[in-house]
Image (tube, rainbow, N blue to C red; front, side):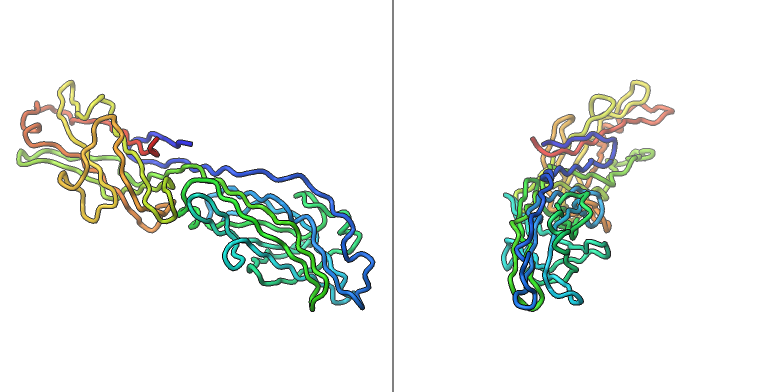
Length: 344
């Protein structure tokens, strides 16, 4: 997918995250604990956690999937009913992560009581206790979003992990295990699947809206630059790597000229990415009108937050061209459009 948007002197490229779909509800049968005497055989069971989870980008720091239901039961005697739930991922040490060609995206599993309450962020490999269902409720529970029974579970991803992730498809799995407190017969449900698809995305901000050079004083070249530009893209091969992007500049004059009543003055446009000093005609790259030029950036902040700037633009007027220009009572002007896109 190619995401391209043309903007006049700055703007923002839209972000789109596309994800998979849920499987249909699966009804549970009687649990493996059905008929067991809790005085002699403690037992726990879980069903409905073999789900497919999707996450939709919301622009917030944390992004959640839609919650899903699953059913956990234990036969612990009345008065001490609890079931211990353990989440285990397939990453190193049981880590929760989705893998793709560009690396891995960590995710979080959160669990919640059937009756509501606060979401509990599960630590991979560590048990957390919840109130179990009874046998009758377990037998009719399903994993649909509209089910009235069962514990609730959702997936969460962190924005900073998305910012660093290259475009691509990432998949991961995890299992849900139910144990009776103190040990006994436990049950591990089939693996749940997490699929995250990141389309090619761009963000372009902070380019100023006017490059006004005022009145020429008949001495030297003239230039006007902007050092506050921020470009982010996930068009990279690996986590933390540099991303490539194209810059194409056009104008309402059809070329790099200022116009005043039919009189024109030519100018040049330069661009630089991740430059440690201010852009000049010597350290910037001169752009060809209407032709994309590719640059690289290590910028990995999708929001361009915290004052982060990683690109610069310079408009340059040559002294000889200014000296040859016809004097007019009205200013020479040109409306420039700067387009930043992912290379084809």
